[in-house]
Length: 477
Ligand code: ADP
Ligand code: MG
Image (tube, rainbow, N blue to C red):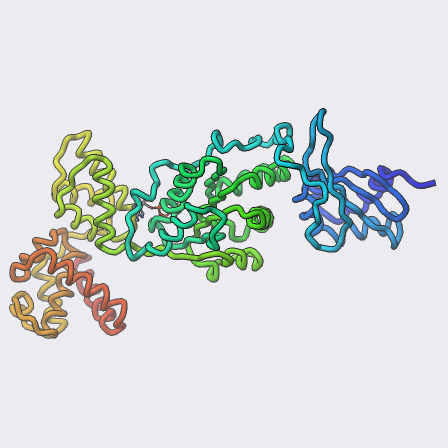
């Protein structure tokens, strides 16, 4: 007489229990329901496709060992996967396949588009509806207020292409990377907002690493992984911001890997951001990194002066505030940490202008800046900078301050202007005044030349750093 499947499976569980820790046992083995035991074949039912894949990938040796020791060497395992949990009217749909071959199962019993998911999502989500889903997008991040510059041109164009045809272009996944405050979040949210507006039937979801990780851990603890996965698989456009935070999180990566594969296979769009390109990402499974490179990887760089100016004007305009060019230029140069600091400065200016009814001028800008950006130093004088720089390059002080256009004079002059900008609070116009009455655009040009030369000429950069030390000694004393 054949032993019934429940008994066989209970014996298997006894073996398995000693091979995995309690949490994994509860998550991955307890939900399994033994269905049939016929000859050498034990059929078990698992709650989802994902569940099946997870078992196949992580627990085949353990499962094999268990059924062999309970049923003998010839024993085989077959899965019955619930594709839809069904309800009273519609029984569960299942799909069967044998274990251990690692292939993607062929689903011969796919539910049609109206498979009823309503009763199936006890996790905090139910069936997603594109009209009502909370996409977690901030409506103020749009393409219209994303300023284009050399620093972001490729990323922006790729973003626009993806927004027009999500999942259809070869930019899938679209991976944008760059440092803090370069506009990654703004851009990916703009893509999401654009899609929602133009293609209202698409389910768009923006998640940051916290959302994804916390939901995942929550689901793991509450044995709701299949619900978690089902939720994500309904999404047409998945935006995952700051993926670098998944580094070292093995299980979360594993889950993301599955979600990624299934979305990608079904032509859904995936958009990600990171602080560095995939090749430099540490703590990631190789197979995940290789997928990150499948589509298009584009970088965003620190904005240049012109782009910063445009961003400042853009932001102030959208708040209905006039900002004098002089003030905008002062900010574009002075706030050289990142655009998030810039946003803080601008918000503070807006606050002063609208609520305290102050006029936005240089004095106000300086005051605001002093409170926000600490690095700005003011205790070294233009005279001292000019003298130190002239001595260093062995040129006549008066010549350097004058109008001579010889290269050996022009470079020290530009360097002196550069330090005036860095270490004093003078406006560009006032710096120009101190160098023979030049206008602010000449000063801007000087600053840009110095920055360019520092990038390309190591000797020059060393000189500037040397000088910087000399000036700082003075400031500290
Ligand atoms: P990241 O995600 O790369 O750290 P954010 O997208 O949060 O940077 O950008 C920081 C701030 O700078 C945001 O207020 C954003 O709106 C603004 N910003 C960045 N780039 C641009 C741009 N090209 N045009 C307009 N605003 C920008
Ligand atoms: Mg961001």
